[in-house]
Length: 325
Image 1 (cartoon, rainbow, N blue to C red):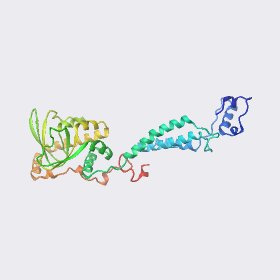
Image 2: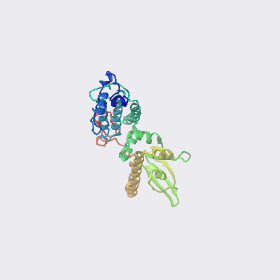
Image 3: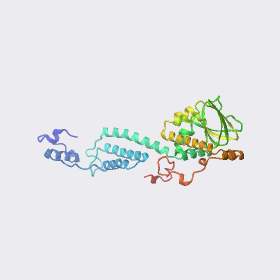
Image 4: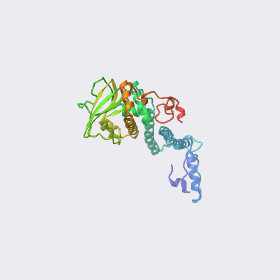
């Protein structure tokens, strides 16, 4: 605030009385008159600085990124106020004389923008995503297998895909269309597969995926890379299908990739189970039980299956907001 000579030099002219009464001037005179080897404890910062430090401390006590961003934003707001008021000391709300620490204000505004914009995005992702009945069934299937949230499911699984209905006798994987991976929601599909060693017929039902050669997208090698498949609807069939190119593009996100891997592992395990009990499968096929059967993972969730409201990505943040703290 002052030239060094105004404080240290013994024969320089004294500053104005208005400056002599300021806490900064008194502190500097105290430092100037003290021996150089003596450490002087300064006056603590004012309330703005104290609360700013408190919010930075609270940001380190939470693992929820939303709350971390929230407290960091509050800390930067108070740091901006503190810089605008000239870093007042304890007992003062404004520095005397008042000045503006412009560098602190600029850096704090930049930090506030980074953390507050991230906080708003995280808060937006905590909303409850509305889904149609069939879309909600599909989310429950993915959630039970891979734990994916509704927001990520709607954005990276449902949006690039399509829910289709096929009448009996319809060829589902039309070779004239783009290559797509199909998940059967309900119905019976009979697939004829030709490969180098011969040919084979598969029956697919609710919860099954085809074609097999597309199941390598997430690191699960199941063979059938050169196989040619014709999948025909044996009953009214409802499927969720997604373009293979879109499937590749969505695999970069770890949570989405893990959800797809869990679904693929479940489908392969079910095929292995059906292959080991052909007599039971044939009896159910003849009675039509499997054609009308719906995988249990599509059924409504029990209360015990829902994630707690305070967990990140639960979609229930706004039910009891204060419990998240």
